Image 1 (tube, rainbow, N blue to C red):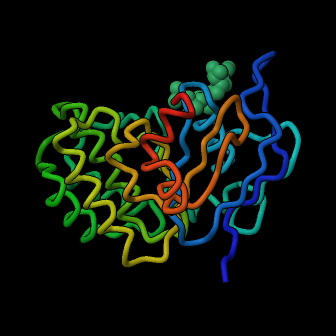
Image 2 (image 1 turned 60 degrees about the vertical axis):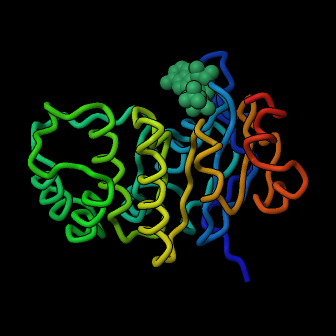
Image 3 (image 1 turned 90 degrees about the vertical axis):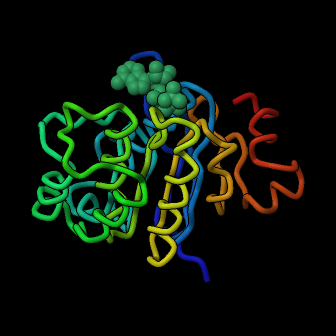
Length: 232
Ligand SMILES: Nc1ncnc2c1ncn2[C@@H]1O[C@H](COP(=O)(O)OP(=O)(O)OP(=O)(O)O)[C@@H](O)[C@H]1O
């Protein structure tokens, strides 16, 4: 029996004359890995910001973990924003200590294990990190948390193609044991598609197509091929 963790009912959001989200209705099932896909400006990041309460819908109703998004739901969400920046100049290990003190559900031992899997040096300070190393650190801060919902907005941007596979394996490894729900937006569909149970294509702030990834693959060959058809 499936149970929804996110229910969006006809939600809309405009920035001035730009309609970023347009009467979007969508249900995300508990325990699923859902790829939120779509071209630039489709509304992916805005939808994620709504889930984390950073942006409120102008109209419609959004329910996350059984209630309206806010500080109570946010303690149960690990969110990687699209333009994540780490401002302090700390080593990865010091950052994990900070995470243990601040982030609900953060497990330092899991973070250390993931850092090894992802080849992230522990003694390097953030100012000396490459873009890809910083991206790994931000990702680990999210996926080393035992929280019901993980929301990753473009987690692989800045990570080179040859490292991505290893990082995606670490991600699968991190979430497979836990009953977590994962939402992930990405333009790297080819590498990530094996991870997805469900797929949502957004266009102009509304659902263009949604479905079970396996079923869509039977019909279209691959989610990557489908995304080409959808014009991503
Ligand atoms: N704070 C803002 N102020 C004005 N317009 C905004 C703002 N945030 C988003 N928009 C607009 O809303 C639309 C949706 O943007 P959003 O960032 O959600 O798209 P996206 O699907 O995440 O795109 P990308 O793949 O390029 O990251 C775009 O047209 C964008 O310009």
